[in-house]
Length: 361
Image (tube, rainbow, N blue to C red; front, top):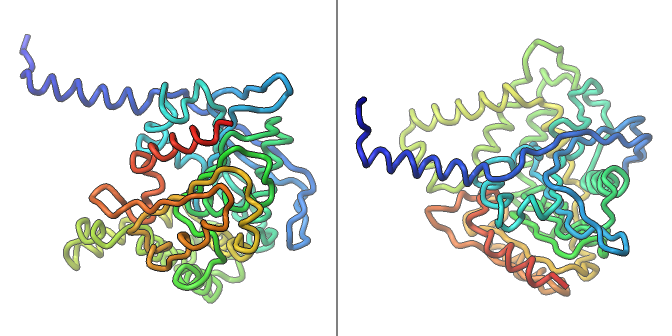
């Protein structure tokens, strides 16, 4: 028998231990909840709205029948609940004795309207799909929890990027529904400035693309070229300049990295789905009602987020209007990933623990 070098054995043991830690949580259970005759804010109605979701753990209720351990986690634009089942998020939060231990909490990871495996334009309606907004998305998830899963109270509502914006709206629309709120990588104000501009570029690129054909591009003919523009903007805005320079230090390497990213998006995404998802932010404006939020709220952004740059001072100003709110901005470091820092739980999970503790009562 050939003996393995001691150093290699140690290395393999460390890798194995890391894998075990990352997978130390139960596999999520997936299902669908159908809402019949769902009416959108636009006045349009969908006979059957399908909301796909994943759950980990089991719901618990107190003697009065109040749900005590539900955690709702909402994803970002063009994402899905599946994006959280990864080592840097679930592996840091859902394992035994971790902040959101799935043996203690009932974790719900839904796909919002127009995303993932929930009802979306590419299912067949294309540009005839109802024009949904963030208010519709929040309402559908509220009905998923209350009607579909029997959850009448949440221990925590949180989300990343678009899901973070939804978190602000949850706090205003259903102020007594949760004990704690944690919006990540977003601002409590109407979409404007550079954040609106990059979205408008994507919207205009798709709508003005002749091959988009009013949403009726033929099946099997490939996506309209404007989906590439959308993917390029997502690559541009989603990280920080230092990381982008590191992975793409030359002209040729930049083209290679960007082309690879774009091709991956074009293979799995749909132009109508992306258009609708980006346009959905049109009705987001929590600013006028921040004082209505009653739950403990912790807002977390990162200093290198190009979409929500701290130089604007919006978060620092508006958080003062939230009765039980506080905010932190994670300093730039070799561990932050720009806007994508929201999914790197190691950067902020200590703050999550603090929020859960201070909102126990």
